[in-house]
Length: 315
Length: 310
Image (cartoon, rainbow over all chains, first blue to last red):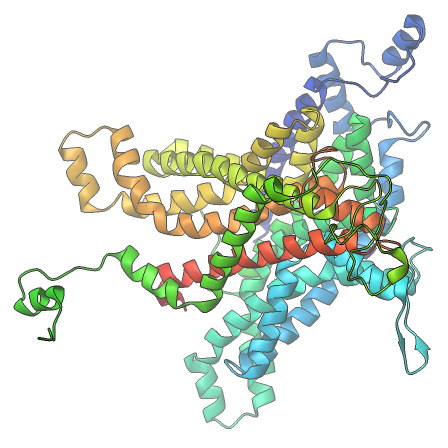
């Protein structure tokens, strides 16, 4: 297993290399640069600025300089956020984004699996149809519609139940206070909850019809025991291969969520960086995201094989 | 005199000409029995017709600004203090610079549906060609081509589109192509998988023995036979493309004013929702209904084309 993991990790290096190369040249070929402004700068000053960021050198030289720095873990200075390096900006935003994403993902897994199992145990009954209809709503309604609607209900109008004020702040981070977290995390996790519930339901129904579950029932185990100890273990397997796409989905969703709720994570840096032609910042964030997705896919594959002894590594 | 059997029944009873039912006849029959899918088709058809011909029948143009009715609610809005008092002609109210929201929502529908269709077409062409070639040629080339797909898979694709949009300076048509150009990956995988199994079949061998070239086999024999799963995936790519465009527009990277799409309208609406919630309500409702319809049709088609999967 260790050699498999190492081989996969080495395989990720060319992937990252291609991503870096393609995005580097894509961004540079685009018209417009980070220091274009309405007011023309005097040519000497413009030249000095470009020299400071190596922008006056030929493109291929810039590329090799960038690669060289990257090999040392240096993502370069941000072009637009003066006096900040990209690494500093990412280090600033990453904990926020990570907290948001991890919370949303954990909630999605717990609720999604619970709902899916519940639906499968009541297959084709009212509860099943109810849960699956709600899941369809969760899958269909995009985050950028759900976020403003929930904000409108809980933030702007405010909700009062039995005299308790349930209204929530409409935005901001406030150092990660619980009240500020509820809305963004809820919106971010709704989609994955729905997908996980659907997947769990499907695999759970299949597992519940298998022979070993019948055996477990036949030897007199309680229903809870059968579901928790025997069925659930096999039913989570298909979920693991969904882990990679789910993380990618949460990353994408967090772009919107961070924008809407004014949360200072790295998703906002990416959007602003792309709009401002802040080359190094965009590349830096993209490299982070890609590495993260690759690592999680690898983790999912290893986990899958570890949990299901029938799976053997290729080659 | 009454005829107990129709001509077709008689023929069938005689055993001469039994009307065969093709896979597609069967699938259509099953699809027609799926109520959610049929209703979805009807609703989508109505929305599409309204989007295409609706704007010609409206009193207002999508870009016409009337400063006497800025951010006013429709006449039936519960809060009467923000009403238009414009004689009930703005059924969905107006936006913050006095443009009629019916006209804008319908125009947005045009753009969003067009994005969905064109981007899907682009992804269809690239994905089917790529997948069929990789699957048919096989070997080293297949491995290389699929490795490339894996690489692209590991980038959250919306980031690529964002970079593409910045590069192409938010060009209207390139937006369509850019979305299509990143959505072909799954299509290519599906087509390749199907091609791998089809190329083992006898009729391919027969075609090759008959002297048909690789191009002929791929276009005439393989592509027509991978159609089933591709159709299902197409119905899921259309809403995904609409969503991608709206996503970009929401971030301010998509369609530009005065042109509009559902994403732009929802974004505007979200900014004004505290004072003018109707600006958010109608575009969001239209888009959500459309997405629902495509999902139901996709589910229906999957059940219809692959009944053993139920």
